[in-house]
Amino acid sequence: MMFRLQVFLIVSLGAALGAAVEVQRPRGVPLEKRHFYDESRPFTCLDGSRTIPFDRVNDDYCDCKDGSDEPGTAACPNGSFHCTNAGFRATFIPSSRINDGVCDCCDTTDEYNSGVSCQNTCRELGQKERETLEKMAEITREGFLLKRQLIEEAKQGLQEKQGKLSELQASRKEHEEKVDALRTVKETAEQPEREAKERHLKAWEAQKAALQLEKEKAKMAEVFLELDGDADGLVSVSELQTHQELDPDGDGALTDTEAQGLLSGADKVDSAGFQNVWSNIKDKYVSESQPAPPPPQEPQDSEVDQDKDSSKDSDKDADQAYPEDDAGDEEDDEEEDDDDDVPEEYDDKAPPAGPPAEHSDDSDGAMPSYDEETQALIDAAQKARDEFDSAEKSLREVDDQIKSLEKEISFDFGPSAEFAYLYSQCYELTTNEYIYRLCPFNRVSQKPKYGGSETNLGSWGSWNGPEGSKYSIMKYDHGTGCWQGPNRSTTVKLTCGKETAVLSTSEPSRCEYLMEFSTPAICQEPPSLETVAPETDPHDEF
Image 1 (cartoon, rainbow, N blue to C red):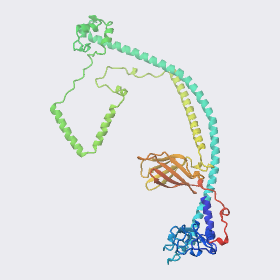
Image 2 (image 1 turned 60 degrees about the vertical axis):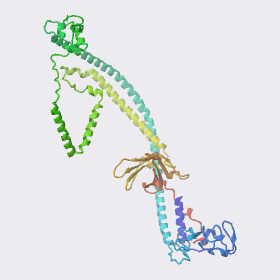
Image 3 (image 1 turned 90 degrees about the vertical axis):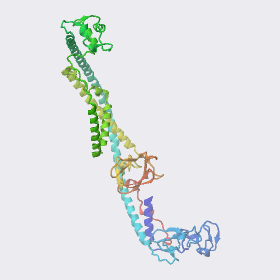
Image 4 (image 1 turned 45 degrees about the vertical axis):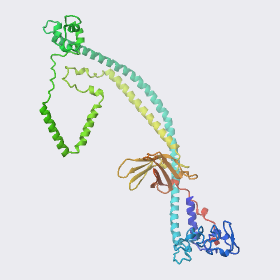
């Protein structure tokens, strides 16, 4: 529609530049209303309110309420003056501007009695406007040619995508069957692997139990020898009382009765009977060969005070010399706090604070390697798992491609899919402060030019143009929320152009952005000059 108007104006201007034939009519009356102003009969106000003699038209006195009797004077406050502007566009100005000393009409007709010298600039203005309109018309023509190419490319692209989608949907069944088959192979291979691993684990646990039993027996024999002070092959009550840590009631004294109770009621036990005794005392017994930990030494009070004073002085010096170290101290505190959060299983792995325990065989801490037969089963199962995972990954990729293609095909890219080329593309505009990024059918964002986080100005919503021009406006909403305000949104106004680019951005309302976007996809088919040239009466030319 805009292009048709442009061509109409070009033709009109061309006609205006031709030989003009002035039609006689009262000053300020447009040509199309000439028939209301017939000098041979009285004049009737255009609103029909009254009829007056024709000589009272333009007599500088307002007779009609609508001001129609004074089209060429400033007598009526609601009147309007028609500028003929031969060679340019005709226009209307308020009657108050007639003879006000300011040249409003390019043909100078509004200042006929003010004494102001005005230059007729209508031809120059008409020439400039015609050149501008011709450039705009050329852009529209070239843009429409590009649009036709985009439509053809969109048709071809749609056919290719539909073909690709059909291929993927057909291949998906093959992928699904392959996944099911490999799942069966995997499960079949994992069953003997699991059984072999269980056998290996049980054998290792049995081996550990046997080693632990041997170590327990050796420890028991060692303790028996330690307790058998007279080497008579028996452990007596008195010998047991040499280890007060075995006191069952914790009163610090191991009585005869308590010792006899530990010996299962006997006064003495041999090595065979000591097995039952050992189970009662092994958790409390402290070997004589194990050195006791040295008692902690408390520092002298004077040394402590001196150390405190020196530490305070050093802290003061450090604070004066390196005041910025406070931040480091806080970080150290945070690290210490973090240490408190270490899970319990890691605490169990920490080395003991006391003296090292009795020598232990490292061989019982780690499970031995699998035998060749078990390892072969593990390798076969792992191979089956890898093949299954690869097939399952391929199936997911096919599903993702199908989903992506179905989404793209379902998009409304315009009546002829002319906007399809914008899909998966992004366009930027850099201003003094920000970098604006428009990704059609996806989102709009804003990022500070000199660093900072990106702000979402809206995600794709829908086409939002007026009736008859639906595809002229894009709407993006549900962006990042404003502080104590609504979520950001962006309206993208599309204009015809040979290039695809973001032309401008603004924020007409808080958190509501307006973006102008140039694309050939919006260009309309230009009409021929013959279809828009007005039929003119030679006598009506001006």
